[in-house]
Image (spheres, rainbow, N blue to C red):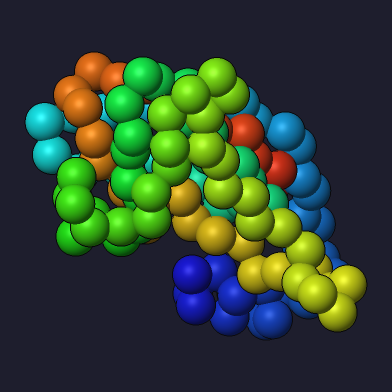
Length: 117
C-alpha cells in the first residue's frame, strides 16, 4: 500500500484514480479465507453474512472463535466501512488483507467501491 501511495505522490496529477462498484461472493474454506485472492483496493466496502451460520472476519489469524462476528439471519449481520468522519476520502483498504472464517462452503456477499489507479 505504501508503494502505491509513494508512486502516486511522485506522479502527482498525471495519475487518475477512479472508483467503480464491484459486487462478488466469497465461499468460506476449511480455514481462514481471503476476501480477495488478489490485491483489491476499495475506498468503501460492505460484507454481509447471508448464511445460516455466524461467520467472523478479520486478519489472517481469524478463526471460528476469533474475529468480528457477523450474525446469521435474513438479512444477516453486516459490516460497513467508508468515508472518514471529517468527510475526507479514506485510504483505500486492500481486501486481500481481510479474511473470513466460519462453516465451510457458506457464502458471504461483498460490495465495494473499487479504486483503480
